[in-house]
Image (cartoon, rainbow, N blue to C red):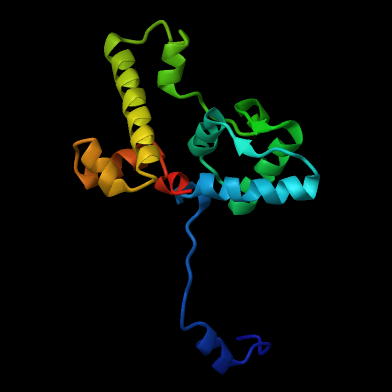
Length: 173
């Protein structure tokens, strides 16, 4: 507009409504987007991969996503080339994600200097995460119903879901 290549009146008409998209790392629909990219990539690449395993889904959710949706799309495409039927964590090796502390503790990979409290906290967090996921699955992503079944209030459930990077959208399918 300032350079004279765009009319001022058109600019102000278009600029009436601003759309701001949050970065991918702040969104709660990462798994939904990843699942939307599966059929597209399968058709384009001629690969039969139809699903993302639970462990691979956790890798996608724990990654900090410095890029945008295009980065996620490229990661899914790459994983499709490596996978045969189901995308597993090893197909997402391009994503540098630290293992979940509770999973590391379960597998006996806890550092020697881990205290009992750290081990218990990690185990409790893992149990809480699994319970929330299981109840959201049963309620098809209905957070109010999930909070009722878990005997907690909606706000607490919402905060825990955010803490554990559990998007309700993935359970609504």
